Image 1: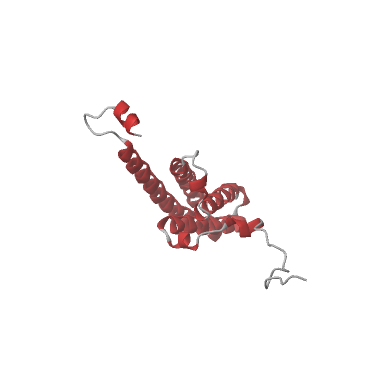
Image 2: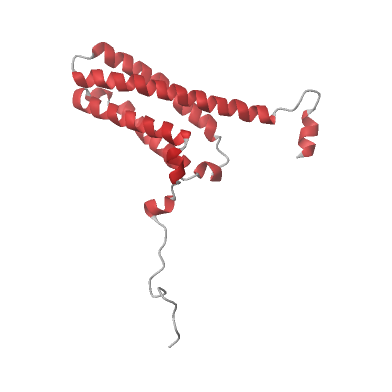
Length: 166
């Protein structure tokens, strides 16, 4: 009987499920990770406050929580580098800008109609979330503009000479 290396009797483990994601722990400490993490926490707090006081407002925090989890996983697992046919910075800007508008309106309505603590708390968390989302949209916009500045030809240089150089 041939000598088998130690541990060769164990069946090979396949990466399936959540183990296959390979989330980067450094992402949590990055600026993008902190922003998305704080958005998720504020969304969950809003969801809890609305669940306690006004079930009619549950839909927006729930939908945007799911969307933020998807973006969190995309960035943490570095899928944006693998899926290059999607302009992730632009999509992230649109997500943050549209979320900021929706949660600003939702927070104003919550503050105006709050008759109990849950709605008032949700309004406060909503205003805080709106500020974080505005910063996120601004940060994404800055990234888009800086990426475009790198691809703009210099004065006097034609587009065709840029294409020839590539």
